[in-house]
Length: 324
Figure 1 (spheres, rainbow, N blue to C red):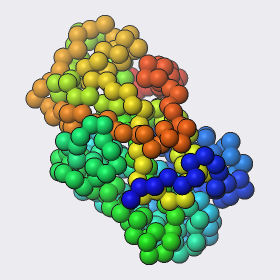
Figure 2: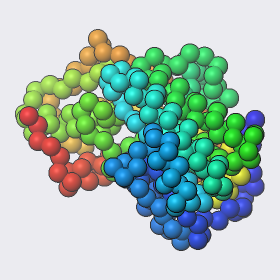
Figure 3: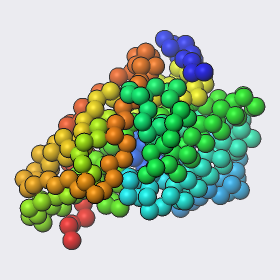
Figure 4: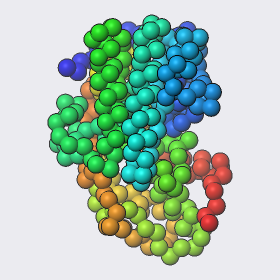
């Protein structure tokens, strides 16, 4: 059962709390840190080089020492279709182990509340649109990201199990496709928007007459700026006691084809875009039903064009790797 507790008022304050953002350097984690700076809490951070969250003993020692009262878990191995297809074992093992280790240690030290970052890919490939939270486990997953999806499903089920057995309070958030500053622009591991930005930029610099985009261009996707996700997460932590699953989506869809032309326009690429139908499309359509979240008064603020323009400008300022 999915229920919303006290949708109109605050029942949990982050003020003065020790709040750990696991994965603070990533796309989602950095946005959460920026948003939490408004909450008068002590933000705990630890880099991957200092703590490997797949190692149980190391994770338990660090958490026992710093004793976070609130944890927002954004640490994960993420990537697009190419990365998921190339490294299925890594996507399943790393993401599952991060969740298992943090959940166990958090319960041991009495952490007050956790938030888990999931993904819309947990839902069946052919789920009815828009996808309701109750669609979980009602059909087969998209094969190209099944290992990652299974790890995320295991995480939310683990949170439910700990809530039932130990009373541990958790919120499992399922965002739609994300983008924003600090995104990953690695051609082999990035998601669709940064991958397109990188590809169009490199083609413009190189003077390429054509750019190839994976798939037919027909699939529809919903995108959400990571700053809007961060706002939603803080709202949920402050107003909800326990949520086994809640969607976070913008409600706006765009075809991969239209997205490609939008990115090309923003980047300034004037060549031809060719869609490679020999490559997989992935799920044909994936839009979330986010009515439960909207009922709390949340709504996205960043439109797609403005968000991509900001992403491109930020990436250029950071210094993109030149096209080879």
